[in-house]
Image (cartoon, rainbow, N blue to C red; front, side):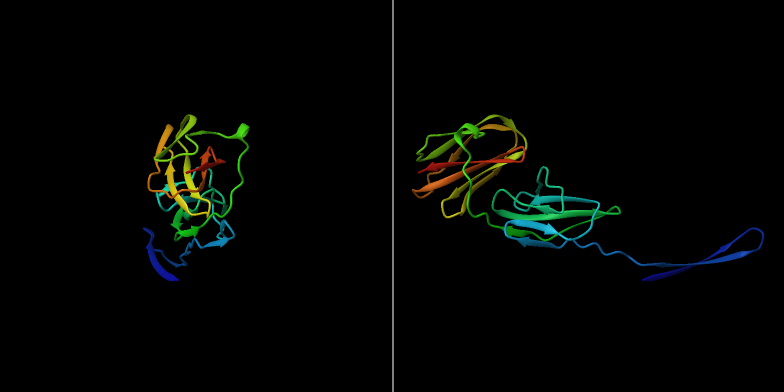
Length: 181
């Protein structure tokens, strides 16, 4: 605490003494990982989760808890009473996928099986979202944040042969398809 005393003089000759004790509030953003869900117990006015790899805010991730749809490192920025702070980055490894039925898939991918490259047609331009490619072991081998693309071509010549899962997140909705090299 900091104590400050001020003496105020009036033109009538009467003085007033004002004592103020200021107790600064320390705002901390602590993050816990439970399974694949990140959370902060800090009571705040607002929350914004970030992808630490890109330093970009994640669209729609504005609550005290956040479950990412792809492996990576994430942090939360909290604001309370006009003050903001950001947590340290936490690593999340996504294990396992639920395949999206073909009729509900939000993208087309070709060729499948692929060799030197794989192409993805999103159907329209998306400014918010991401694409990730995972080996069957769960290791992420490619990640890109969407920036208005409709069509992408990923160089895959350095990947080993095997089964991969392509995850596309558009407007916060994940869609996963199986591809083979």
